[in-house]
Image (cartoon, rainbow, N blue to C red; front, side):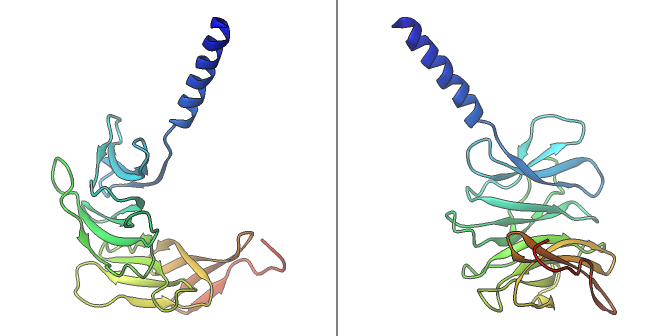
Length: 207
């Protein structure tokens, strides 16, 4: 009987260790290469962290107590865009985090504040001022791509509109890579250039 109890405790301990493994994602390197920003859930709640590229203990980037989805470091200075929701509602809002201090980040400055709209963080333009993201502000069923100047007090500019789910994958210069999800197994890729969009993977069926 004692042996059975010991075996059960050992199995429970192995299960506990397996369940306690944290998940880290959304890595983004600071502009000067000194640290990596990422989202992780060692406490059970996904939160943004910062760790030196030389290693060490990660420090919490912004401790609001709300879930983080993505964090994107600026290519031109010590700041980042962070997406968080409220109460687990997955209606992600964007905020700008100042990373210029030696310690913890300063309080985030809200870039979006519409709880009825979902904002999916995308990528910075190379100038470090304009940030690209996806949002269903136009129609709750569809996601368009917007560009926001984080230093200017003006509305974002919609640069891609489509009746689908568009996700900003990357930005290189003035060109963008957008993934439009038609189904869970079917995605169209578009490169957005000044001359217009280019469909990169025309196909039939699910790809």
